[in-house]
Structure formats: structure tokens, C-alpha cells
Length: 92
Length: 450
Image (cartoon, rainbow over all chains, first blue to last red; front, side, top):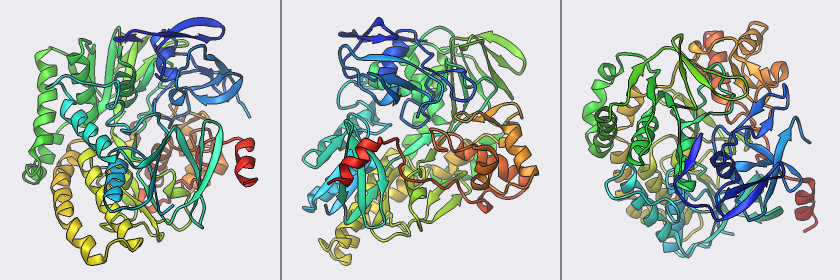
């Protein structure tokens, strides 16, 4: 859906798979640049969801980061080795 | 702390600079990693449009604002989650919560994109135009493949022009606005010419698109199609392949925090079709010591926001006894005058770009994305007697999901007013509650323990 115009400089993992990223960009940007648009399964119907607003308002970009759920991917800055996973369903 | 400013967009940055100029101890908080807010996102670092490129002049203004605010204590990655009646403000940074009592609180949280619900809009691959612009500014990402823009509003045209300037190309722009608007907007043109820059800019963006041969089509309905992600769009029934669909229907003031403050009055702004806090010309809300500046006070654009930030900071200075009322008036006079000039094109912009009517949202379309509530269920709740969005929560849970009504609030409100046959201003806006952003028990315990 999106292509990069700047070089990447580190790596993160998404569901265990390595993807390139740029330190300091948002996790959402790194995922979208890697062609990942399915960030979570919605709480009510389990439908695939991805980001809508990319500014911390819509909460559709929720992912699990380092074991912590309900992280807004658009508000998390990439650090080398960051490990993120699809968030499935509702989380407390 | 004497003055706490929330939001490092143009209003917050200008307020911080003004506070510093008067020697006021101030703290600036922003949940983003760097200053600039939305309009000046990443100008300090990554986003450097070429001279003459769409958005370049604005980026230079953003850099100036950031420079002027340097020296004011600022915390980034700081997410405010509560404001207490005694003036204690709670926020979290890096998993740790902090609290501070502020004598004066200046809220400048800006605006959010108005939701444009269409069938299939929850499919991955559909996002806001503002979202795509944020990606361009903060990470240099360009949409690829068949990229469609749909809706209405100046940002749609700006972003399309920015795409072209960067070598990307929209497959088409689907204008969902009602025909005949430019004629109806004509009476507002003379006033708008007081700040001709806005108009010239808009015409320049549209000119770029026309010269590039980007199809611009008027449509009544757009739908997003696909199994687990967007693969096509339907425009008035005709299908086209799509890799990205970017939606825009204007922006609305972010009143998530002000609606959570007991006693903070809000008013329906008919021209902007949005609620905004009740404010005097200084930005005072109905709560002493709480001010709002910038787009959160009512949509006015970046330059008006910066002026409002300075005006509010001068009023804060008066409240804190740093300047007298006469000194405040003398210093603010030219700013008030300039703000009026910057706001002069608003009536024309509002007439040219009114939000899309709620009646066009089909019953089957989701309006509350978090709790997956459709427009039809909202209308059915009205038929059952739900009076407004607050009562509708008991019927539907709309507005009770993760976004706490940030996305669905305006459309649920509009749908219910239309279904009830009343003016939107007759319905109370969705009440919000602290914490306004997720916070863990551990973080809260940390501050309570002292």
C-alpha cells in the first residue's frame, strides 16, 4: 500500500518474522511500508483491521508490543529489535 | 507549575514561546515524539519539502514556531490521561505516570479528521487522507498502486498535490460534495479576500492536479470492496481495482478532554457542524483557569492557531498576575486583529466544504468501528426512544469502545439528530470520562503512592 522514499537502518519483528525499519519512525509506518495492513482482529467480530487515522485517535492500529497489548502502533517509535504481534480480539 | 500547555502544535508552541517571553514557568506536553502537532508533523526532523512544493511555506512557519518555543520545558511522548478539578494533571511517559498541579491549564490538542463512513471502510487499505499525509511527513511513505481519494475538503486537494510533487499519482479523486457549492459560497468571497493566500493556495493545488490529468469525478456513493483487505472500490456502482482508498470529510475540534471536564460548556457551531468549547476571545472556557487555543477551540487553521496560542498565553499571564489587564490588552490588540484577518476566509471555506450529510450513510454501514455498530442500529435506537449519543450508549455501546467516541462521536450525533428531526445543537454531545487514554493500574498506583 505504501512505498519508502528513504532508506531503512534497522530491523524489527512482526509475528516473529524480520522486517526492515527506520529507527524513530512509528511502528505503524514500518508495518505499512513492509506491506502489512492487517494489524489486529477486531474485538467484536474478529474482522481484520488496520490503521485509520495514524494520529492516536482511532485505536484501530492496536498491536501487541513486547508482550503488552493495546499498544497504538502509530504512537510507538521503532527501536532496533522491537517485537510486535497481531492483536487478536478483545484485550483487558 | 504555573502554566501547563497540552499540545505542541502551532497553538501550543506559540503559547509556550509567549509564556517564556513573559518569564512564566511553563511545561509543554505532547504525546507525539516531537513538536509540530499534525500540520507541522516532523518539520523539525524528517519532513523537508522543497521550496515551492505544496506545504513548503507552512513547514517553514512550523520550524519558526518550534525555534521560538525552544527553552520552554517540554516533555514528548507524554500522554495526558486525567485532569482533576483541583488542577492536578496526570500524564504518562514511557510507562510511568506523573502528576502536577497547574495554576493555569492551556489545552491545545488540535483537531481530528471527521469520519467518512462508507460500506467496507473498516477494511485494511482504507484510511484517512490525514493519515496518509502523516506517513508522508513522518516516514517519507508514498501510497503505491491504484490510490483513490474520496470525500471533500481542502486537505484532500493538498495531499493529492503533495503526492504529485513527490512523484506519486492518484488513480482518481472522487468528489462526494454536493454540486453547486461554489455558487452558494460566492457571497463569502469578498471577506475571504482579506487573506488571499488560502484561496491562491487551494487554486494552485487544483491546478496541479488538472495539469497532471488526474481524473476528478463527482460521485454520490463510494464503497470499499475486498475480502480481508481492500482490493477494489465501487463508485456509483462501477468497480475499479484499488490498493489504497483515502477518505476525507474535513476536520473537527478535538474536545475529548474538554468534554470530560465537569462544567466545561460546549456549543454546537452550525457553520463548522461540530461542537467546540464555549470560549471568550482570550480562550477562557467556562472553567476558571482552563483555556483552549487552536483548532480545538474551533477550526481556524495553523496561523490562527498560533495567534490564539499567544493570545491565550497573554491571558494566562494576566491570570497569574504577571501582566495587568491593560498590559494584556495592549499586547494582544495586534494579535487579535491579525487573528480576525486569518479567520476571514473561514466562512467561504465552510460554505465550499460543508461536511457530507448523515443521510447518505446506508443502514448497513458501520459507524462505530470499535463496537461494530451500524448506522441502521443507531437509527433503530432513535425509533425506540434514544434521545442522543449519551443515551444511545445504553442501547448500543456506540462510543464506548477503545476510541471513546473520537471517530464515531460526530457521525452518531449527526445520525441521531437527523433521525429525530432536530437540529444537532439540540442534542448533548457525547460525554467523555478520564482516563482519556489507556493507563495501567501499575502507572496509576505509581502516582498514588507518591
